[in-house]
Image (cartoon, rainbow, N blue to C red):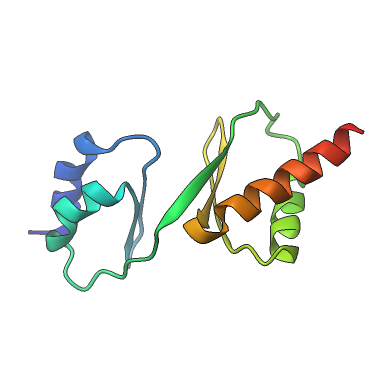
Length: 117
């Protein structure tokens, strides 16, 4: 079965947060582990990483704003937290390794607290 045909079968089963990036040479999927377990046999040789946790920046930010995500990325890099950023029209997201999730949240919350003071 062609990979793009299998994606057509997978799309109706996706639940938030999921992401598919279809490129010339690869397909990148971000989805729940349980869904991957059901469909992984269709993707022989796939590289799998995880587990990851999602951090959602559920705030309205004008599309002309520059640099806020860079600031967060720098803070997390200094805390030795690796990130996979993802952005959509309405929200920004970070995928962080599950083992770093608490450290990432503490780092971000500490920064935000200091900004309010």
